[in-house]
Length: 116
Figure (cartoon, rainbow, N blue to C red):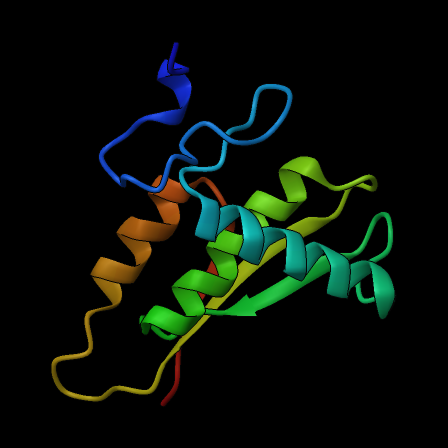
C-alpha cells in the first residue's frame, strides 16, 4: 500500500519528509536544507545564541536564503536568531511594500532602511 504522506502534487514522492513537527515540502528542499545545515556545521558558521543578518533585496536568491535559514533553524541543534534587513536606495519602482509584506508574513524580525 502506498503511503499517502509521500504522494503529492510535486510527484517526486518526497512530500512530508522530515521528523518531528516539521515537514519538508519535497525532496529538493530537504536535500538543499541538509547541505546548508552540513555547511553550517562543517565550517562552524553559526553558534548557539548568534543572530544572523540576511540582506533581503527582493530577489529570488535572498528570499531563498532566508527561507532556507528559517527551515534550518527549526531543526538546528543550537538556537540562533535571524533578522532580515532591506536597504531601499530609492530606485523608481522598487517595491519595499511587497518585501515588507513577505517579511511580516514569514514572522522573521526585520529592519527596513531608506538611503538618502
